[in-house]
Length: 395
Ligand SMILES: *Cc1c(COP(=O)(O)O)cnc(C)c1O
Image 1 (cartoon, protein in one colour):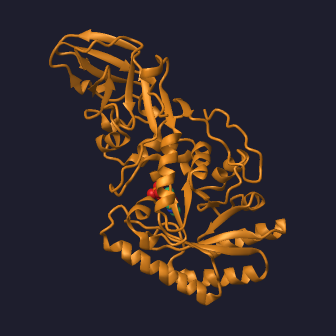
Image 2: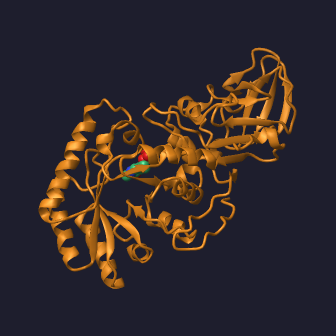
């Protein structure tokens, strides 16, 4: 059963974002089958705007064994929802709540000696061992320890292991150019990672999990898979490598608030950047850049209304946008489909990304909190160690 679009079901009174967990399930199965090793569902940024708990539960029920997030806060949100699956948090400041993380058995990525010391201190206070993944900079000059600091980090980790404070279970890197599989930078990053691993083993570490790949490398570069593929974008239908048909998982719709017939020469919106060149009909939608409709898409964007793709007229405002519907018969209360998987002719997340000079990731993570979210079918917390609990509304 696929989810019905809002238009088919009922008239909307407010904008509505429908999340199709069957699409997330199908994408999860695809990635679990592709990954040489295990699949980690990356549900940072509220599951790429699709709901972290709902996406996590769905992915776990369809092949994922791990969850990955940026901050400890995000990991604790998953635990509070009753999710006990192995979870890794990889980007935290030195004064982050490492004690809270260790107490909740959240694995921590460690990119520096200073972070290692902070985690070891928290482990000492709690009298518990912290599970950690040393994070190497494999060529982005972003997160992860640079090569020059790696040996010292590994040696210090061996010492902390001997103290019983940490257990190094993983080594991780990240690929900066995996979206273009032919780029030589990918082979260089893989070699760099191999060298980081050799150094770690020489220092005496025996990690059981090596991980380097995200969505694109999982789809295009089996040499990068190792023991765990960390997949986020792909679960919600975004394939930055452009190689694989995935299922989009969100549909954004909005009611037409008002309709007006205007003569040729009518200026529309701020700055009068659009002037009608003929008599036409304008429909107003209550969605704007505060809701994540990128203002940069003004002049290019379209929506699906009464079965036809019609252009957005003038600049997108903070809370509203105007659609030039031409001579189509549109009345207040009709539904416009602003973006979706595309099967009904509506614009896709990728279309909005293109119109605004961005990437789909920015579109899906940018949708505002005042949009009503509806998630179906209901996700269940996997019954691992705890009774399943029905999820509450993810508003
Ligand atoms: C976001 C992120 C991922 C997931 O990347 P996708 O391309 O969305 O699959 C994996 N690893 C790290 C370190 C990340 O920050």
